[in-house]
Length: 148
Image 1 (cartoon, one colour):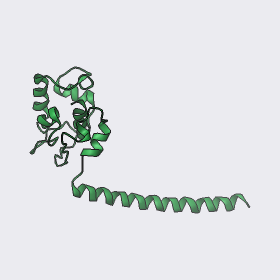
Image 2 (cartoon, one colour; image 1 turned 45 degrees about the vertical axis):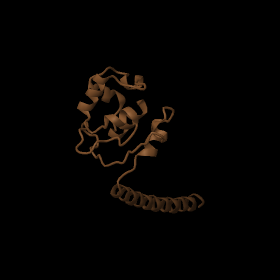
Image 3 (tube, one colour; image 1 turned 180 degrees about the vertical axis):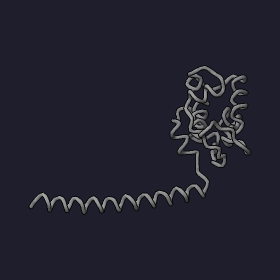
Image 4 (cartoon, helix red, strand yellow; image 1 turned 135 degrees about the vertical axis):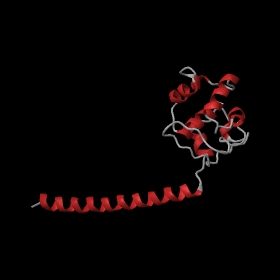
């Protein structure tokens, strides 16, 4: 359960302290989560983060996010279209799985975000290529000047 909670926090791009404060629990709550969370704390989480599928949090089955609107802290993304399906036999349900592995294994961006990211990558790659060529030319000029 702890790994799934950490995966949700990563989705929100918030840290454990901020999450703990937002639901009114003590510092270290996330670190101490084991195989279960008390119902009173689940209600606090559900009230503050209605987009979180509590059943997924408890069992790891289904999608991380409920359909519909999100209620994220200021500055956190509210896009609930990420596919975070996890089956009971997937690595994400294993307690030994790292949070990073969970995120890379279970979160896929919608197709339009993939295209936008690829386009930005290609653009930045071209800028770097041009700068590398300019640096090479400048090094050649400096070596000519130094050897005179």
